[in-house]
Image (cartoon, rainbow over all chains, first blue to last red; front, side):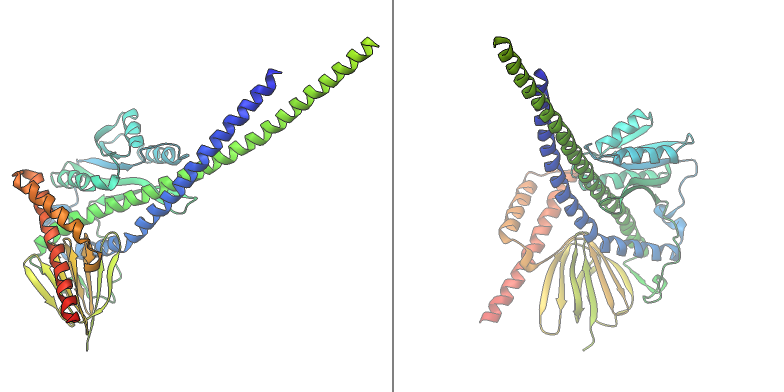
Length: 284
Length: 142
């Protein structure tokens, strides 16, 4: 009965797989907790910087500051695609690509910067223009370089709009692809400035120019960094869920195979007994 | 005594939050001191040390560059990094300083020069903050 051996081998390999996926699930869970914490701790800072920029934006002459300008209408669209370096995270990246496909149906002047190897492959396969790839881990290390590219490009009028596309972390079970327009900086909805003094009454030292020239790139850098944190938290939680599913599937398989194995073994025993009985009858 | 509420926020955490009497911080045009009732201000900060005076004690923090925002009786310091004196590891800082000095001795250029210089500056600020704490502790003991 080669069948029994075969089933046994399959049980063994399913067990091995379940062990590996379980370990990966636990690794992803701890990484997710860490990523979530970083994302959470960075929030007050990001909020304050964003608020400062929002309050400042309506108060100044937009034409004076290239980063506050509305962008070159003939320029191209720059998309910063934040994906992951590794796979095995379920439909996370696929959802991101589908989202991009739906959004960018028209042929436009597109340029991509990819953060994450998976995104790079996708852009290349899609035959779009890939400007640069920053997939070296940790992703946050390349934030200044990315910001530099988009800032200089925008000031020179190469880009009309700059978007961040990434998976937003909603909960451990849910991640959603989103796009965020970071340039041109929009005069955002009226911010709540009841309690605090408005910026028009603010003294900008040493000069509005110096403050803004430093604040705006810093703000953009922060936007990119926040998106990366979100994407990382999403990646790890998606991987955790994917690995949990894989472990469960492996266990189901093991149960089925064990049943088959027991049946086959019982069958063999029954045949052997029948053999012995017939042999005895023949001898008598 | 009137107080001003101060928050020091970095991308990693909220390094300080509380009511203080006076703040002294390194702005890009020189050190500025802030007392309660300061006019609204938004200014750029450079790497250096922040001195926080409360009613009874004085503390120092080593900060990276960033911004200071004052509105009414609230001050917010947004910086890339901020460390209390007791969070600074002296041996590590000395090591970093030595590395920076070595790098500077090799006469680097361009980005490497800037990196080495800022590393040197950072370690010096950290050491300064540490020394202040030490001298205060010893004066308390005597």
